[in-house]
Image (cartoon, rainbow, N blue to C red):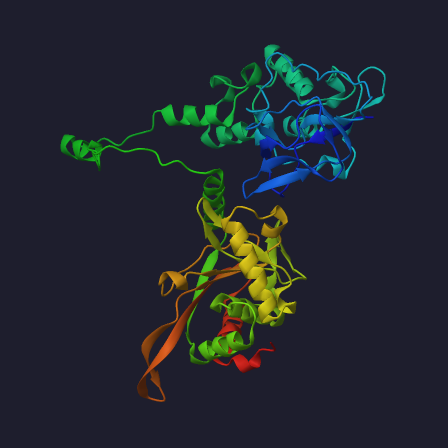
Length: 462
């Protein structure tokens, strides 16, 4: 029996994936485990392997299409297997390259991980499977699946859309995506009054946003001179929109969410880095790999997290969850935004192992060659801008992590030592913490441990 090829879920919050290119042509033989297609997620580009051996058939997705997670995009059949051609989409259903309602639904689990959801067939009580996208749509719209008559052997997206269209035409519930319903509810706008641009006239999120933008806001009564001043443009020159990559858009959304939903608090500490610099110099003399100050910081932070496990916890669904592993993410600037590759089990690694892992991850991050798994499961993040001449800064937490350490450059400063003015190489550390997970005292003890190991590296077991 032919094996279905799905748009895979490569991240917890992924809703869609973009098919960059097929690595095999339709009708070409494929071998299980060899690269079949290249998919772009919000973090990186990934090659997807063929799940079985056979011949690629019934390709329905084109290069450049943005496709809902869980949607079938091809089949892999035996060379002599007879299979039916792909079923034509419902008349007004959206193309794969322009998903409407499914694109705004929560991501479905990987189809291969478990059998497809099933629904009772109307009339005979038998059970028909549902595609993951159809199952999500049914859940989002609160549909009684026994009322859906599938065109084939299982309930698909087109069957759900056809049912919803029938409900709209008979005066039932207005056809709209879940996100559109939420936006309309928050704005106090009736969905029935908004023209829909989706399939069968479904109201999409952009339709609601457009309706909100043209709504008449209440304006205070102003004196003519004041009204003219407010109406005057701040800048009368020409402007143009700066193009944004997919990565930059996602970064902007996630950082905005973090800043507006996570109760940040900040602690700062100036640290004498004289012995830290000596440690780096001596370690480099006996190392085969190039060591950076970041490598030493990873070692220090990993040791401190081992002793202060609460900082290594996460806030997930209203709960504090302890992370067993210490996986440190490093903020890396790339052309299209920011990536945070993860050094796993950093507390178990020596300095050279950390340096080799850091060099490899950073190089592949800048080349766009990271695997999705190398960007996941971080429990703490270090952001070092010292190489750019920055003295100090505060960083935004990367949820669901509880904290992030911002590191500036090592610079000579005049400080008081035993009551006398001395010039010492100083380093400023800024810790941003989530107050839902960590209180001030815990964060202070952790930062004190980090500072103590920088000022006295002999406390570290290398």
